[in-house]
Length: 80
Image 1: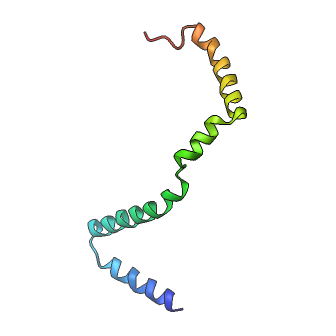
Image 2: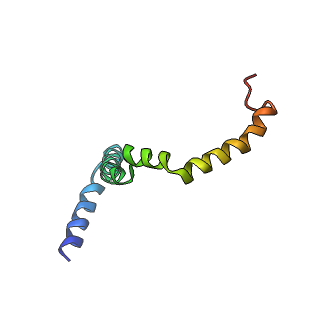
Image 3: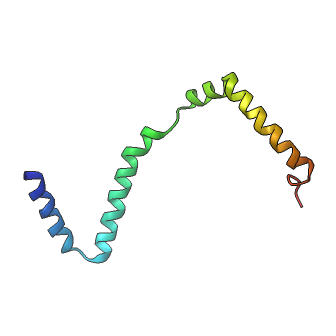
């Protein structure tokens, strides 16, 4: 209950702000949320190196390269 009343008080205070101030506040909140969530989804360089060294991934990359080789021979990869 305490959290709900605190949030209601914050909402009432926000309602007293101008639209520009509300927008600024929303942007700041979004910034803080992104700052706290993005680091958890970043891939470490060591993990990328391990993936690049994985024989199964190397094989998959070779297969993809072979599939696109046909398009390159058709001139789709050439600059015009």
